[in-house]
Structures are given as structure tokens and as C-alpha cells.
Picture (tube, rainbow, N blue to C red):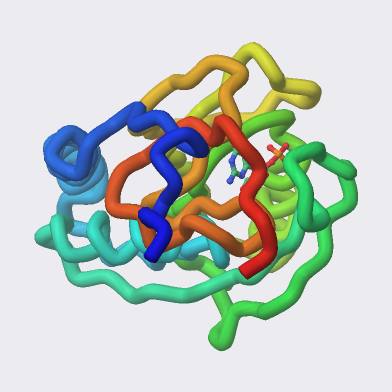
Length: 183
Ligand code: 5GP
């Protein structure tokens, strides 16, 4: 059987232990800032599902979890700039404190769209927690309040992030070196 993932296709950037340590630090900062409040975590699907589940379990706060499905890329690795809602929130968010949980902020186009949507629905406050930030690729300015790791221009997979729906299940954050074959 072929090794999965093929070792020549990916390079580890952050190990599961490094990710867990950073998630703990983020949770500590968020718990301090939200002391006495009950935020709603809005996890952006699909890419943030692993991060959001670890972050939520590290937060000693009464909180609710909602999912917002967006599609910003086709099946490749290049931004189209177009954002499509694939799954909407299940409850109103008027007068609520919202913490958006994103996998990665790249050009900022997706987050700018999501922020507009959350604000238009009357949230009391909105903050953003992104596992990864690619500041050098920003095309629109967006506020990112909590960042796990800043990365360069690499295309990152694993820990929820995909390439053409592959590699979301890798426990580490990895740089993609070769685009995967279809399964
Ligand atoms: P933006 O709109 O900021 O350019 O892109 C945001 C979305 O594009 C992310 O939520 C993510 O789904 C996808 N994306 C951007 N960079 C990467 C990357 O390096 N790896 C993966 N897997 N997705 C990315």
C-alpha cells in the first residue's frame, strides 16, 4: 500500500503538539477578554472544523457554537475572490458577541464578506480568531484579533485545511509540495 500522505507531497510546518500549545495560548487570551460574557463561536466551514473543536474545548466559558459554510476557492489553490454561502447560521445573532473562527486569512476577501454579513445581522460585537494568517497576501484590510501562526506564501493543508478536499484529516499543519491525485 502507498504511504499516506506521500512524504514527497507535504512538509510539516507545525506538529500536533505545537498546534495544541498554541491553541491553549489563544484560548487563554480569549477567555480573559470574554470573562463574564457568553460568546457565540461562528466556525467557518469547512476549513476551521478541527481548530474550532479544539478551541471550543479549551475555552472555560459558557458559549454557543454555530457553523457558517462558505466556499471561496474552487478545487485548486488560487483565490477566485467569489464567496458563496453553502450553509447558513441556525439562530439569530442580534445583540450577541460573535467570535468568528477561521482557518486562514489570505487575501482577506472571504473574511471581509463574512464580517459584513455578521454585522448586517445586528451582532453586538464581532472579533476574529484565525488559526493562520498570510499577511503578505492581503488584498483588503480586515481585523484579525487572535492569530495562531503567521505563514508566508506556502499553501497549507492538514488540521482541517484541504487541497481539493484532500488532507483535512492530517493531524499536523503542512505545506503542500505536490497537488494530490484524485482519490
Ligand atoms: P481569502 O479570501 O482570505 O483569500 O481566503 C480565505 C480562504 O481561502 C480560507 O478560509 C481557506 O479556505 C482558503 N485558503 C487560503 N489560503 C489557503 C491555504 O494556504 N491552504 C488552504 N487549504 N486553504 C487556503
